Image 1: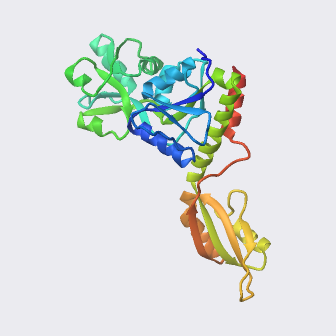
Image 2 (image 1 turned 90 degrees about the vertical axis):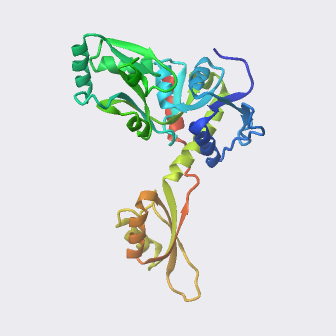
Image 3 (image 1 turned 135 degrees about the vertical axis):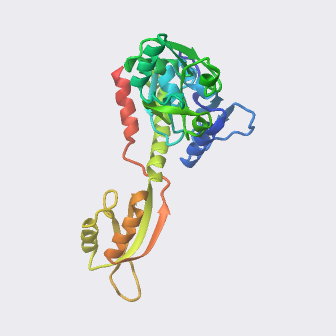
Length: 335
């Protein structure tokens, strides 16, 4: 349902950890949300003039984007997968935002010592000679997974609120629910089946396909969102290193650095001469490396004669054009 309106809209989770992390991501990416009144459900991103921010329950965001009342939304992949159901009105334009990690799993009572896999569950179902009662907030994903595993006799119980108590009080045999730390399961004497993982989830950025295809202003905002979010996410995985290295020439220093496994940089190091009073051949070297490579990089810089190493965080790493934007355009052409 496309609505005639001039403003472009993005929906963010209205409360909880997803809300906090969504606001934090946008702020760190240079797109802070301005919300003068914490009770309002409407806000703005000053750096994106034509974009209005609306706050909704995370479960409603997919529905709003699907019906066209909202153009973009940040939600969980688990919720998107449950509500999308191959609906062509929705498109994921950035599948990994780096927060909201959880998994959707098949969970059984801990005392079921003989039930540790889906095949064990099938045998248990055959022994009781009735459908397995499954309580979940994700009926579509659950039914698809169970049928794919060969469980055809299934009684779905769509539930809200706390599910962990369901097996204990007897209104369900097993549950399918989200797990982040696993503490709640242990406290309620529940366990995950070895092959009961239905999906891995984290926060994602979604959009209305028709709006992207028919409204230039929406497509423009999409590119700006992807430009800054992708550049920021890419940067958070890296650090910037500055060091002084003595050598005969930039080429000779570069040759030494390329002989190492880490300090070659993204496209190569930037090397410039240091003007000093001692007339010695010192050069300043700048490179970008992954954070997890830092200890090895420091060692390799020292091996080629480096000193005065300075390490700083990176805010953005912009590509010629975001690959996520190109992928989005290709996906729009598919349907």
